[in-house]
Each structure stands twice: as structure tokens, then as C-alpha cells.
Image (cartoon, rainbow, N blue to C red; front, top):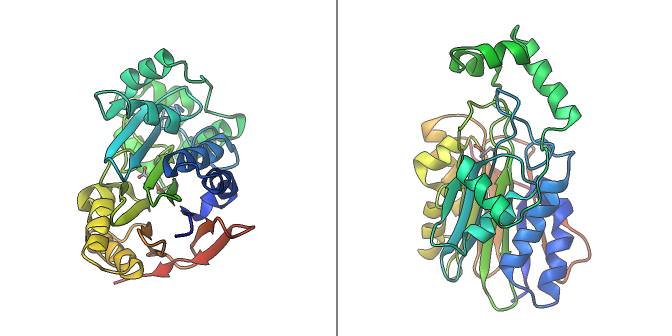
Length: 300
Ligand code: ASP
């Protein structure tokens, strides 16, 4: 089987880093972590890591998870503030007796393992935040003073979504998956999406395959989309049908933007969305460049 990595469209640039690892016989886990780190460090991506959009108070709260499809060990962090690579903190959580650390506890753990600290709000995302507040007549000072944030969140929030997904199959046939995000732009403080919730936004199983989501994360949590998709792969459904069914399940709850990437254990893959013009990316060890392909559109 040819080792391969499948990603959401915004992961395309990172794939050569992961493929380099798979080419030299490295693990799917190492490959997805390396790819996720690449995007976390890319300040031009306003949906992930440094340069990701902040919450309504201007604080960048990051969510990430990593899953080992062979052992079903997983690690995740949510609402992590002040660290450069949430995916690597998530990977270290995997080695503890716990699986998901959030907020202050996640930050404490990140500091204890010596994870790199950083201010994830950049001058340009600070500007975007201030402009988004100004559009509804608010300012940084007024939101900090506000007794109730939800009414402001509801006005500011324009479903500014985005996340990056990676699923890899290595030379030994092991599958791993990683998802990392700054979540919903201008969200309520403490809002956690599907990305760090194993089974919702991220799941894989080496026997069947993997699935990861982007878009309105609450839908992936309500449908346990990634786990459901992997169960469908295990039942023998092909990746294209699995991806389409996942979008139909989301559409049945809410018409908000929703996307999925699916990789089967035999290396075949597909992706679907409920919005036209969306791409996903993949690269295998025989390719010299990343390829992108249109996601299937499922609207019913
Ligand atoms: N799923 C992410 C979340 O809800 C956002 C996104 O992928 O667009 O936090």
C-alpha cells in the first residue's frame, strides 16, 4: 500500500512535510503531527494556531486532537491559550492517564512539558477583531466591561469558521489523524468545538479508516460525525458514500457550512461539503506535488 495523507484544502501546503516522514518509513502519527504544526505556525491561516481568530474578548483559544487508529489512544486540548503548537501538547496528553485537558489545566500541562509559549493574537488578527466589534458598535473596552457577552457574540459572529484536518496511512498500514483549530471566530469564551472531541471532529481506526470534519462543529458533536463515518467504512461503505452521508446527516440538523474528509484503510479517499467550490488535498509517497480535488457537494 502506498502511504498517503489526506487533508482539508488549507492543509495542502503542509503535506510535503508529512510525506517526507512517511517516505522514510516514519509513523502516521508523526506525519499528521508535523503537518498540523506547519499550519499552526502559518500566520496567514486565520483559522488555526498563531494568527487564528480570537474569541469575543480578543483571546485566541485553541482546540486540537490527535488519534492513533491502531491503539485507539488519543490526546486533546481545548481552549488552550498562549502556546504555539496545541497539536503537540495534545500528543503529549496522549501519554498521560487523561485524554482531554482544557483551559487553565491544559495551559498548566503545556508549561510543565516545556511547550513553546507564544502570543497567538497577531497585529492583523487583532485588527480584524476590532473591525468585527466596530461593525456592531462595540470596542475592546466595551466587550471587556459587558455584563452579558452572548448578545454581542450573536451579533458579531458571522460563522467565521475554519480548521485543518490530516489523516495519514503509513508504510505499516497504521492510520492516524489530527485536527487543529482556533475554532469559531469571535466565539463565546470557553466555547469548544468538535475538533478536540474525539469521535465528533476527528476519529480513525487502522482497520477501517479515518474521518475529520471542518465547518459548524456543533453539528459534528450532535451527530458524532467522525465516528459514524468510520463505522460506515467498517461496514464496507466506500469513502465517497461515507462522505456524502455525513453531509446529509449534518444538513438534516442545520444548513450551516459543513465538510468532511475520509480516508479508507486501503488508501482510497473522498471528501464532501454542502457548499460549492470547496477543495480537499492529498499526497502519497509516489507524488512529487500535493494534489487538490473538488469536494463532492451534498445538499439534501
Ligand atoms: N469545526 C470548527 C469548530 O467548530 C470550525 C471549522 O472547522 O470551521 O470549531
